[in-house]
Length: 164
Image (cartoon, rainbow, N blue to C red):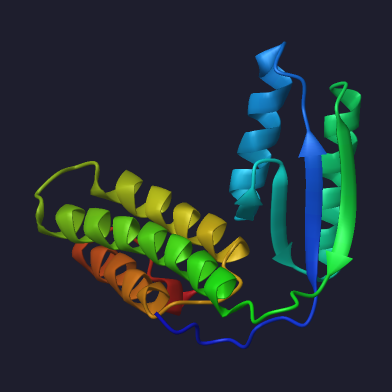
């Protein structure tokens, strides 16, 4: 897969180690990293394209790691070799999420189910969450949006995003 956006010059990296016990802080940190859409480079090393938002987010998570009794360092870096594989991996991870949204929207559009409006709301929110961690938009992004809008048209009482 070829990402639509160019590769970043600089990446922000978080190197961290969290104690195994208690497991609650470790799991909470892992979930925060997952929500950010980080690339897992190795155990305890994650990366995101560097900008003010991603750097701040990883700095906050580093503080959480230290508060949980672990160690963490935030780095800015440039790969010595091309980072196309890293970019492709991030784009593919988002593409997979978009495909799941698209499949759920298409299934709900053909079902005669009173919960379609709730599904539509849920999928719109999910698109927003994915979009926030979508640094290299794959073609599936537009396909998923189109599927959600098709669902909106299939739900008679749903307001269209275009009419707002």
